[in-house]
Image (cartoon, rainbow, N blue to C red):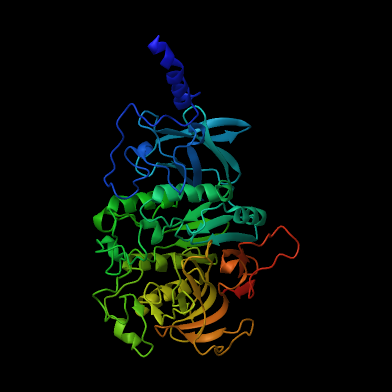
Length: 543
């Protein structure tokens, strides 16, 4: 009788745990988990992840019919590369994931792959892809879990190719991104670019990457998307990669990567495996990979570079000019005192790629995509009273490395698109003289209530050749004495606190590029929707 008394209670817990096979499982597993090569990093998503307490980032223990979180893809040179991202799996669940495409109204399986327990992603690579037509796809796991989308045809017949560009998805706001999804889907770009800092949760990349995917998957499920990681994604406040050496702290200012190299590799695998094959896949130190490459879409050639991976760290190499090795607070310092021989920005092998890429596909509109800008494009950092003369985290330093990069971009007749700075700017770079370099558009932050920046000259005067649209446009020297001409900027007192996204329109017939900058809170489907002041901004390209 005593056993019969407990039977309903036992049965209730059994049904809650097992259900019909699609509900969240009981917090037990019948097989041991795969043990990660690290324990501090990604602790929410590794080893016996189901025993972790609920976290504020994302619910990892989803209904099993929802375990396929999203897919993200590119198509280049008739090669489809599609990453399937899953929520964590229990040890006794299958690791097999299937890719199906739809032909003549019927689904056909074209490939199977196994999920990697470290990061919970896998890559489908399909050669001889027919890029002449739209193709529905779906990613399947088990009997019921699926994610569907569309592999778009190459828009090579379109005169205008449109890129949406976003950056800096701060965890200060963990809400949805419905405004972005609505606006961008309405504007219907051909390609989406996330320039970095998709994750701000540092050592919990998998949970934060899943959160990012849930927020933005309805943008990239139906169009190609480029994602590249930046410093916060790999768990550092700033990064000077210095060929993959070990950094002494998470500040990273002596150069290198602080966290376990397998963690860094996991982050890059999840965010960049779906990009076209690397130009030169030779790893850097400690087995960390590279992903710099190019993507041809619709007759526009996009170079995707890693402007952090090879860059020299300042600590111990140059005179320290402020309370931090990467900050210069003394306006009277000699900029050449920190522009020393042997310091690198892009690294020789990546510069070789840029120079070679620039001479290929002549007559094609070109753009370079990277994490951050190539100058010190902000005066005030973090708080309105924190004026910083020069920030070595920006790619304005080292100056010789910056100029080598800009010469390669200029020789390619390309424009530069980046993020990271939170502050949207349109700048015409100067190398030897004002305006002899390429144009650059740094897009605003997705969320800008964390470490805002301002363009605010101390004398509050416009520079020479100002277009007069904004108070402080014109020619300036940044804190490294790099020549820049400011044409537009979005300080955080603007609508949406300066948060928003960029839209770049490449017009092949007229050989020009139009930079658009849209506030986060604007509804572009409504009449009278306005961009930030100074936008749109048109740039005529060289023939």
